[in-house]
Length: 254
Image (cartoon, rainbow, N blue to C red; front, top):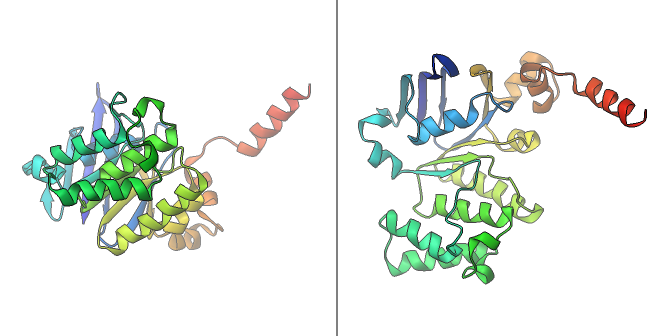
């Protein structure tokens, strides 16, 4: 289990994340939602160990991650919101480098990279520089890099970004398969219908504070709303989207 206990991150005294507590269990998918600027990516970076919390504790399988951060990082797979890659390398070169950094140097590891490139429809472009890849292709490289070492904790920050329909369908099934294999899966996405379909429970953040932490079904029942999109709009969206759309139409037709 991944567990956050009263975790905060402050910059010059201003909280980006303010005393949030939630857990994500092995064998299920936890959706992590919030408007832009709500603190989602900051939280993800703290969970990966890229940022240190100002206060509070993050635990994995009952142990604080800062007790042995190197050992902890060996057990996580992370797809960041922004695809930072060495674009002068090819996909094959980049993934080989990642494998070597993780101590995966056997022939079987090389075959795994080759197989994953095939399954993600990148094999034909494996020797081309990543600089020439589309956003979706770069996203697939990040997904492969995150899964190469069979991590116990999978963190996905907007993993569907740039993916074509076929690849998105594969990723949906893959997220469910990872959870079924006993992984802890935490993922953030703006595709609320996908989050609703995949997640056993949902955590919603707003202005750095936790405002919901429950199953989608329970949230529906408590708020008497039909779906996650309605729940999210009620809890975390401050603007009236219908009114704004109407005002835009009035302006462009003026």
